[in-house]
Every structure is written in C-alpha cells, then in structure tokens.
Image (cartoon, rainbow, N blue to C red; front, side, top):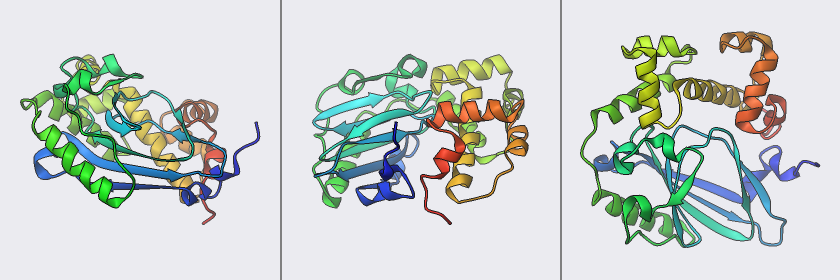
Length: 261
C-alpha cells in the first residue's frame, strides 16, 4: 500500500487541530483533561487517522453520539472525512472505575453508549469552533459534577502508580514497580485489572515506547540495540515488534511523520 503523503513531515497538521483544557479543581480527581479535535477534508480523500493507545478511558461526543471508550491494547484507525469535530473527556488512569461500577478491564477494547454508564440527559455533541469547545467543557463538566461517585482510595492508588510509571523511565519491570508501590506482584496485577483495565506490564511498556516516540519526533539519533536493552527487551527485534504492534508502524516509519529537525 502506498503511504498517504499527508502522514509525513507534519502534513496532517494542515487539515486538523487539537486543543486541550485542564479540568476544574472539583473534577480533577477523576478527569485528566478535556480535548477537542476538528478536521476539514472537504475536497480531499478520507484520511486514516492512526491513534496510539494510552491507559485511559475516554468519554467522546461525535456526530450526535456519546460513547464511553475503553482503552485499546494496540493502535486503532479512525477514518476522517469531510468536515467534523469530536469533543472528549480523558479520565485519569484508574479513576473511571468508580463511575463504571465494575472492573475497567470489562470494557477494554470496547466502546459502549455513554448512557449505559451515566444514564440519560447527556450533553449534545459539539458544533464547530472555539465557542463550541468552551460550551462543551461547561456542559459536560456540569453533567459529570452531578454524577460524581464516592471517593475510592484504590482508584487514587492506581492513578498514583500509573503516574509513577510515567514519571520514572527507569521503571521497566513489574516486580520493581510492585516493590516501589509496596505491593506484591499479584496484588498489583489485580489492582490494574480492576481499575486501569490492563496489566502493569502493558502500562510500563506503553510509557517506555511513548518515550521512544517522543525522541523520534524530536529527531534524536537512537542506538537501537542499546535502547532495547535499556527498556528490558531481550533484543532489538523484540523491541521493534512491540513498537510496531503498539504504534502501527516501525520506529523508522514513525519518525517520518514529523518534520526534520
């Protein structure tokens, strides 16, 4: 398949934009951020948008539908065409469990109608523009504020452990993470299954591979063999397989998405 030239050297930024906003303080225990994406492909072919997974659940509003999206284990493709927009809420890793009422792993790899989780009277999907994004932040914020669950110390514990993984690149092993958290490995695995939706090994690998992606986007020269060892892989081939499964393309192909530094 011939690669879409719009994927290369930042060309994708010519027809789409993304904005983010922090949650108000009373929602910050549960919500990581609000986000708003717009695209305008009128007169162009549809674009296959590659989305790389993070250990977070999203609530999205698009085309009149509100969906709860469980986290994905690998990259997914969303087809963008014409003109459109989507508004989303990213929940803090571990902190959607109090809303859901069951293990977050039960929705991993799945999407379900938001009313199945939150009940009726959801805000309407957005129109186009900055004012629309601001309105959605207000409306969705008020909606969530009226449905806040009781505090759950285990949700906060899970969120803190995921934050530690993100902040400490030297964490590459589950047993080391468990020791840092003061938990046994099996207890840590149960906590992640219940509150995060995937195991701790997946989360560790995801953040370490994300760091590789950031280096590539910055145009850094990388010693692949040394990096594979640093990240705890047996060899470079194993690392490349993991990166490709997660991101959807090899590290060198991924690097071509970004402008030369």
